[in-house]
Image (cartoon, rainbow, N blue to C red; front, side, top):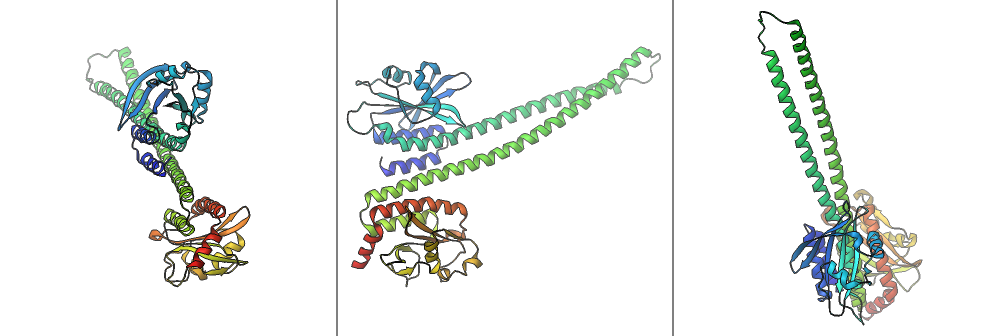
Length: 436
């Protein structure tokens, strides 16, 4: 898959306001890979155990059509695989018949129909079907679409949770209005009865004792009903307050999950970009500069550097840098165990500095380019061997690095260590610097 397709799809899915826009973005990605293939998203109704609606991306629109087909129309192995929500599963038995059931036009060579389940909070929510031409040579479209489908699965979960939240809010509002209307109606009727009782003339020539007892009993009953109605209104108010509190907690949890999904999408993009640079770049200096820029931009570091293991024992050399002092040149050596980077290389443990006063005590941080007290120095280790040290500081807008940022750098550092070790970057880059 071209890198631009995966990157643009990740951005489009993150910005999609609804399921239709996300499905259109996935359809455009499929069209770039195989114009002969087509896909459809089939909504599943768990209460009725039916496939109820089919959504098919056609250009910049989504065509909706009703199905009303029971789930058990599919073969048992296919149903089991869909419920497991694993990768695509080929429907080899009567593929053409089930392709027509999913709304696809049958291909002359029969084509291959593949399906997979889409889950929301552990329950099946939809079935994604892909119909592609039968190939003798080359990679299957389902395999090439696997990263894009993984991104769409994350977006589908986010959109489904948002729709569920909106439906819960609408249901809560309807119930609240209905309870309040019933309370107002009953309270009005009771007030009318009380007014009628109070307005009864006091001067009555002859009062029947039995009627007097009945009136008093009726008044007592009306007062009791008013008290019960007031109690019901109080309980309804308490339930509403509790429901609003739960809804706020749900909003917070949904925001947290949305942020986690966004971070996962960003991580997938960064890993894909780093591996693409490794696959497309043969120049050692260009590869090192590109990897450092990738990490620096992601961590919003105005000042960053990458130091690699020198051939001399117990030394590191500056391989690439951005935003450092003019007198610091690439190829400069530092001894392992001296300075911040040297101590990190010796200990092979990351260093996180957050406080400005604490940061000012480190000798490598005392220069005119230092603007914040937040600093990360991370050792690059591959199969127990030290590869180098990655340094990040001066976060944009005086931000502060946290332990979560260290874990993010850990993942990117593993990728850089793998690429540097596999390509022999410490030796190749040093030869390039010596030839200058």
